Length: 265
Picture 1 (spheres, rainbow, N blue to C red):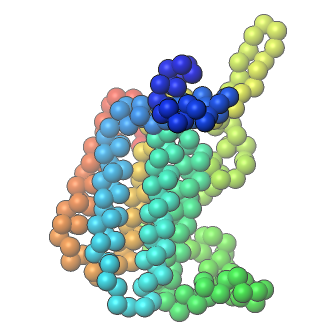
Picture 2: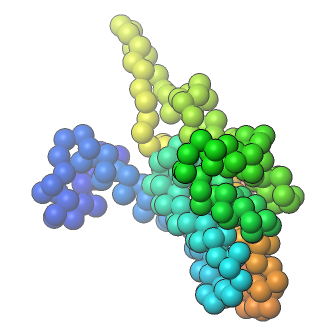
Picture 3: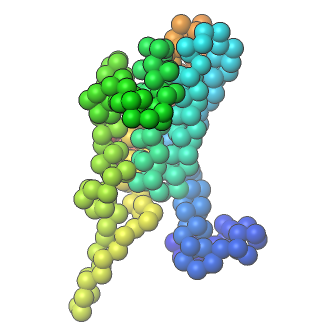
């Protein structure tokens, strides 16, 4: 998108305070967000429905009386906050950054699940920074087999582990795969130019990755539901929302496959 067109998205305050190439980057990123929402309305609807499910669950859990459940709930709220940032970055076509934040959201939810299962680990988590002995105890409790230790408690977590590993390679760590995704070349008769694309430009790949993010986000919410299933299953309205979300998710996959000839990942 040309700078003159993208800059139309800027507010007067932004036009006054942004300059140089960053101004164009900021404007294009915002314009891409609007274009992605309009271009993939079925995906946007699913993400918003999932956000509403999280909020409904937190509302149901406002009055927790069991002390051992407080920290897991706080961690899950943190996971949801990370989900929202990843959502915004993904639709703004900042895919590597979205992967990185969503990966953190997965890890946070997995940690919450472990502590919910063994409430005594709350004290190990709280004392993590209290010196070498506390740090060793933390690793023994949560990372005896590395980060994978957090994702072994349920089938949902085991499935989420595969997504966590993929996002680590493509969004968090500076791997060959992570750089290659953003790399492009432009050849002329005289030379060859190497470019790093800060924003995703391929609509087909964008849609495919956003759907993959939706699937991972749905699994992360499932971790929350499983932790507090005894309370949340009493909310009939919540169950209807979750059923409708899964229905819309399946419809979104069918729609994207038909419109863009892409496959579910």
